[in-house]
Length: 88
Image 1 (cartoon, rainbow, N blue to C red):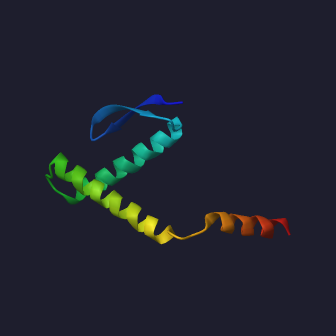
Image 2: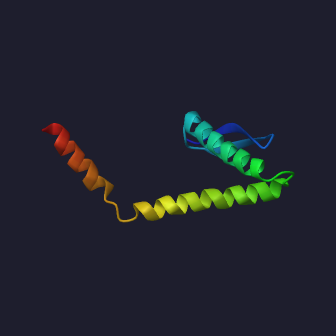
């Protein structure tokens, strides 16, 4: 069930709707806030649009790198093997 959550990024408060738990929304908020802070620290007097754009590009690059690394990995098979090993 979707619910509304309040988050704060770049000094602004937003209300977002999500099916995720409040803890999961908070984790996403913290992740994004950390990434924004990292980029903002590297751009003295950078405007917010530039900070947002560079942060978005950095997160997209990280996501795609992880996606490519895990393509073709059969996680179900790995879990079954681990389960079988633990049962021995």
